[in-house]
Image (cartoon, rainbow, N blue to C red; front, side, top):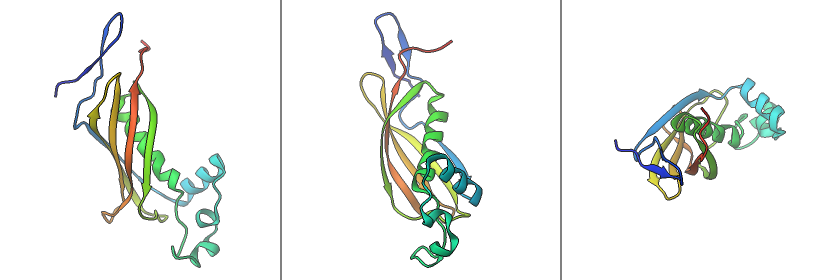
Length: 148
């Protein structure tokens, strides 16, 4: 695939990314991950950490934090852009709960090359049953300075 470039006053920097480029990462959401995420960010909603509480809800048990699932998107974007882009926006729609034990595959695909080194990605998280649990779009911008 042909790769676009970012023009700077002194050089042309290849974006290193093209329409249709995609990557995915797969992780199982387990008790340890949910507890660690709750400790890290403070999202200790009883739906996530209290089995007795959660079993009496419509979810019938504990569920992972939405942003824990969304963090897998960041992983896919970093792998796809090799750390040469900075995350500037993300739209998320949570479409189904992620239960403990669910295996989530997060995917990011380049859907648009924008001006000034910006790239738009379609983002998606699907569980082991093929159900979409999260979908949206992300935008990243190529770093102007490339560390050597």
